Amino acid sequence: MVDEIELLREMRGEVPERPDVSGVRLRMAGHVERAPSRRARPAYRMRFGLALATAGVLAAATAAVLLRPSGGGPEERPAPSSAVARPSGAATVLERAALMAAQSTAAEIRPDQWFYLKESQHMGADLPAFETWNRMDGFRSALREEGRELKVGPVEKGPTNVLRTQQEVEALPADPDALLRHFRGGAPERTPLSICVPSCPPEIAQDAKAFGTIGWYLKYGPVIPPDTAAAMFRALAKISHVSVEEGATDMDGRPGVGVVFDAGEHGKLYYVLNPGDYRYMGVKAVHDGQSMGMSVLGSGIVDRAGDTP
Image 1: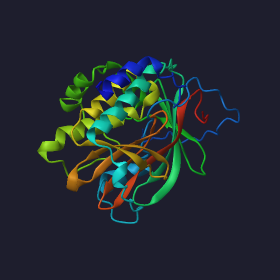
Image 2: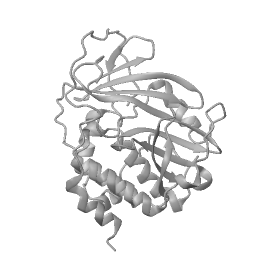
Image 3: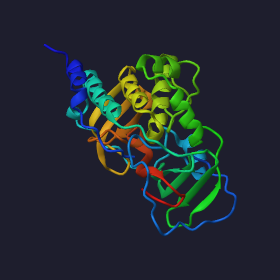
Image 4: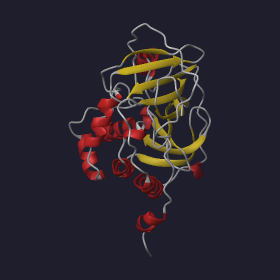
């Protein structure tokens, strides 16, 4: 009997090319810019997992609550047992995601364009949604909180700098085993939400690091080369403690495919993917029946700060 994964690989040529779909602590210069009334046509529409850029107001909150919220957050409903896939199911789903990633078209993004992201925040309490713009040359950022004006200022120079991220992903290996060795080795640890407070036990620490770092990069979908994105999905399938929950939802209740790292008593970390095209929809951490996270409500590449896809 032909192995299911091999069948998926044979279907590579049959997977239709899906359309191009689609961080930051802002140190504001202090001036306010009105969003232009005309929406510029984006050169690249939403594609793969899109950035979870963290606004300054969230930085301390995320570090403090992590997987142990003090209450007030929505209660996680236990998924039916039939919704949890066995490891072979996880490998199948993630291989399918890899095939779709490999079939996508690499974007040609100009340095003068901006990476746009709109997120909702559910960090123990529901906070206002916000929009961020990061110029691809790495020099300017913009922020608009829900109901407020657009503010433009200098960009954060740390790991949320989009130019730095673009350079990093272009240097990553496109082989899943090499990618895992890189993330488990000396690569800096990055994760949209932490798991294991204060730290993971040694037996799962490297797996948790690799899982978190891959998720961090998947959120920057438009800047990831298709073969690298495919390698990331295949690498996730090789990590212990990773499964797929077909009936998962993001923090806004939207149904999706949950890619889950189960840290046992330390909780679970989910990346929620669109069930149709596997684009990144958000992240959530679940512990003791409570959950927190952030959802991507819109994203893409636009021509000016204030424009939306």
